[in-house]
Length: 306
Image (cartoon, rainbow, N blue to C red; front, side, top):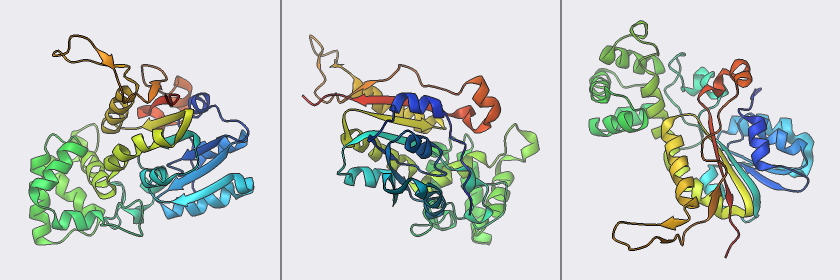
């Protein structure tokens, strides 16, 4: 099995993380290993983490040529960061679903292919998308669609999902596509496929992606050495909003409320922002790698411990 990964914002990530001989990094979303390989080529030690065993196996075999300076680990980045005992020079999180996962029908991530309605990044555990949709209450499905998919017609879609499963339980991607199209129309009537938001929402729910990110961001800062850097690439507004808020709060120098006569130093400040705005892809990268279109890179540097 071959994982191809054209890493997004590679030069910008390298500029932030500044890899060199002997520095230690955790790539919390190994995937095809493009970012990890670039770090290794510059002499760094890399711990590559992924919950997808297919990615770990394929990319682990490809990067085995680097020997002991590359180590692969199976699991979610938040749990591995919490358990990390090696002080890190840098952490990279390249969020979202991989191209390989989307393009493999039997994984069930995409409305473009028919296959089992699975969507698990780690197929060794957890409930499939079919399990969730066949057993969740209508209100829960509405919340997933509205919050995770930002689907404006969440209630209509959820209602049709309930009707569809009452006739026949969900087992395939095509069944979910049909249900969404019944609820809100067909692809030719809009600029994007009507099932786009629904598939995103259910995938996020299946894999607890936002929960993992919420736990992983503070764990990453704790795992860093003073002066170490956290770089995060996000691909949709929910992730980017969470990353932006966390980094802003971690870097806030003073706290202030209308009830206080003066602002006071923030006792929880742990980092400094590396740039006020997110870094986005250059025109050249947009042409060569369309996946970079929605990518946003944000970073912080851990402060010296007082």
